[in-house]
Amino acid sequence: MQRTLVILKPDAVTRGITWKIIDRLESKGLKLVACKMVMLNEEILREHYSHLVDKPFFPDIVKFMTSAPVILQVWEGVDAVDVVRLMTGVTNARQAQPGTIRGDFAMSVARNVIHASESPEIAEQEIKRFFKEEEIFSYKRLDEDMLYEEDEK
Ligand code: UDP
Ligand code: MG
Image (cartoon, rainbow, N blue to C red):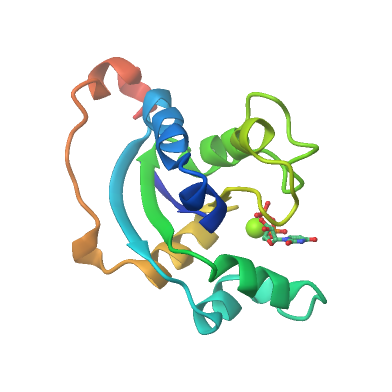
């Protein structure tokens, strides 16, 4: 099993569509193992988006990402990182495939409703950044035995 970090961004929260995104991830068969609402700040955004700190649009990212609370989540499943990235769609929501979360719910590059970790290594760092070990839960989904073949788990 693999874990990945999801952030439901301020646009998802303020537009009241967080449940639609959660519905998709749950329906897919991913397991929600951690969840909390927080207000991000510039310090943590500089860490989380360290690859973008020098870009001219970084102040706009900070402004947007601190404009309302976000919902931080950890989702678990086989190949969860790739599965959630595929479901998320490309960064520019206008170019994201219909059927993806960004493709169906957003119209912007910056305001693209969801963050999802891009590799298993980055997912581990991101989960540690936002969650204490005791905030991440271990439980069995009732449909777990039906979702996977024995040799896929
Ligand atoms: N972003 C932006 N303008 C850009 C590129 C990125 O506002 O030109 C924002 C956007 O919200 C994106 C986030 O910065 O989701 C992180 O960028 P990254 O390239 O890591 O894209 P992602 O992994 O989110 O698809
Ligand atoms: Mg990224």
